[in-house]
Amino acid sequence: MHKKIPIVVLIGGGSKLPAIIKTSKKPNSLFKISLVVSHKKQSPGIGLALQNKIPAVFFNLPDFRKRFFEGSEKARSSYSKTLGWFISQEEYAPKLLVFVGWDLIMDDNFFDFFKSRIGNGYAAINLHPALMPQGKEKEKIKLQDGSKIPVIKGEQQVVLETVLREKHTYFGPSVHFMNPKNFDTGKVIIRQSIKVGNSKTVTALRKKLMPIEDKILITAINQVVKDL
Image 1 (cartoon, rainbow, N blue to C red):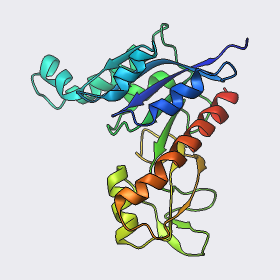
Image 2 (image 1 turned 45 degrees about the vertical axis):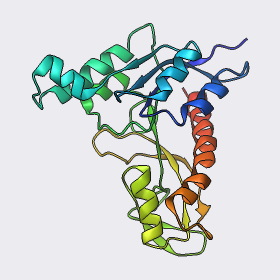
Image 3 (image 1 turned 135 degrees about the vertical axis):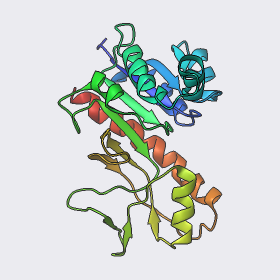
Image 4 (image 1 turned 90 degrees about the vertical axis):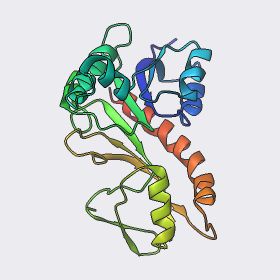
């Protein structure tokens, strides 16, 4: 049996975790999950990881700030460094970090533990709920129908509301390497556009988006770990 590449998955609620766990458990999977981390106070994903005998922890910034810094904003850089150190320990030793629903901005204090020759210099990828620039594209993305849309940043709810408000004809997720100096940027590994069609609500768009996110996320993880 081949040796699986260890990855660490950083989550919010953990909606993408079932697909990653399912793939990782296949005998021919290229990767295994050595740790799951959530920054939330509560996360279904932590429970799911533990049920599947995967180490999992909460690492909540407000709690960290309160316990060690008496509420001071200086806690953020220490939080980043402490979490980076913890994840990088030999027990977990990830070759790749996978961010899915992790909406905290992490700085160099974190990413410096995971420098790599791949991507934008760090072994870290992120699932973004909007189409990101690829190739020669910069601030505008060309859609299949020839129209162009601006890059949409932010969380899923904001992205989908923007798609409806601005009457885009296509939308879709991207998986990209992370660039700690500029959030929601980095070399795109894969993206997939989805026709808006008759979808008139965020709920309808989300129903189309979620399975595509699962699909391209697994594809991206496999593609990256092959190159490690």
